[in-house]
Image (tube, rainbow, N blue to C red; front, side, top):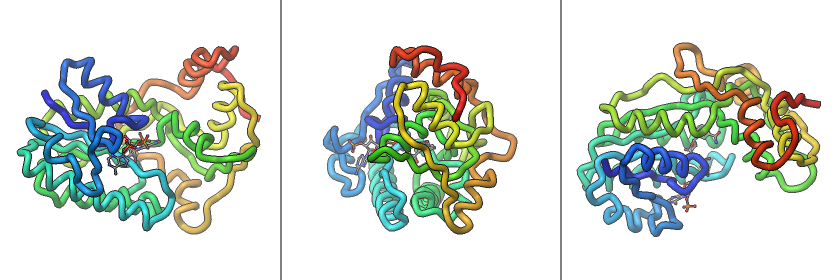
Length: 260
Ligand SMILES: NC(=O)c1ccc[n+]([C@@H]2O[C@H](COP(=O)([O-])OP(=O)(O)OC[C@H]3O[C@@H](n4cnc5c(N)ncnc54)[C@H](OP(=O)(O)O)[C@@H]3O)[C@@H](O)[C@H]2O)c1
């Protein structure tokens, strides 16, 4: 099966591409670095030739409502229009648990993406996921300087590779509309997770947990990012994930690290 992966060079996209290859599918990567710009449509029609299914894991890194809505509106409209012209039979899109209910800048972009998908011409499937284990690392990488400010949030972090495998499974099935979300096996505090990750990778940064203002901040802190059952549960715990990271970084004892 020829499957286009929008955002196939990103954190999750690379794992989706690897999973498709593992299953014998033919992935086609849609990313600017591969000559395809989702927001302008440049290169899209040609890239989608012969593609039967699209997995959309494209992204913009921002907390600005304006930038997020602009990106997901343009990218989703271009992708759906080109997919329609190419005769694509199924579009599988990844969103975030809480994107449909919490009025947070970036989430409003994701909500727009969800709405366009549901109203669009292609048969579709929408999966919402909780934060990836890797999200804690993204927070660190995006914080310049010695302090990492972490929004106060309860989360059920899930392994990105388990999300990728589930997306590919959905891509192989029939379009299902909104499906059960996917979440990790345990509920954790994000600042705690960031501290554990820093320790497991041998890095030193001060971690400040800050409640975001307004209703969105309250929702983040009070479990609005944790799905209500039923949901698909990933198996990798934070401890297992950190142990893998620590082993890769040559650090002793990622597993069992405790927050400070
Ligand atoms: N991170 C989490 O914890 C989490 C949790 C739940 C759901 N999600 C969702 O998962 C998805 C993937 O997130 P991620 O963290 O893996 O993303 P990421 O690492 O930031 O990757 C973004 C991808 O989008 C591509 N892209 C950006 N602008 C583009 C454009 N104009 N045209 C074509 N391609 C473009 C990038 O490639 P180029 O730069 O080469 O263009 C890259 O391949 C997002 O939709 C996010 O909302 C994330």
